[in-house]
Length: 249
Image (cartoon, rainbow, N blue to C red):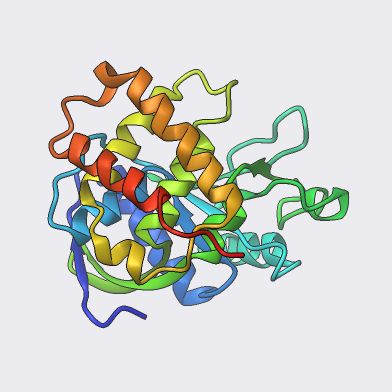
């Protein structure tokens, strides 16, 4: 666990409620999940004293159903005990969104773990959505101590390298009609990247390297989307430098 607390600024009441929910969840169930999505980017901005570019209210968490097969049931049970309920059921039977007043947490699981993992249900009787890159983010996760609205707590989150990989993977979901947000988020994270983030983390594996390489190409093809992010051009160069380091054999 990181030794220092990161003071995470809150931009509105809904975001504050979602962060309090994350702290509640960690207190009830500290293992088997990690923070992803916009709040992951927000946390890394707070960690590096940078102001977030894209505000977002809801929180996204991926569940380690490979290492913790009952994670969906256990975590949704913990949410239920803290006043959360599913925000409806999709036609596919997914109950991925859980709400409590202004708080929203979306629960996701890794892809390609087989039918048994994909068909496990939570406390509300529904399954949840598979997402690319989730297992890689989980593999690079450690707990981060935070201060949210004056409250001290802990949230598991991917390393900065893991966060970049998660955004590169999210960009591959072509059915996402708002997928340009991943370019902006990637630019924000790249601007935060330091040599130690690469040196002190595990080497990139071949799949991570491939996703990041594709994302770098996508970023170069869509510069107008993210060019306003301060420090992002230099950050992208640092990502490219990281890609030239040795892969594990």
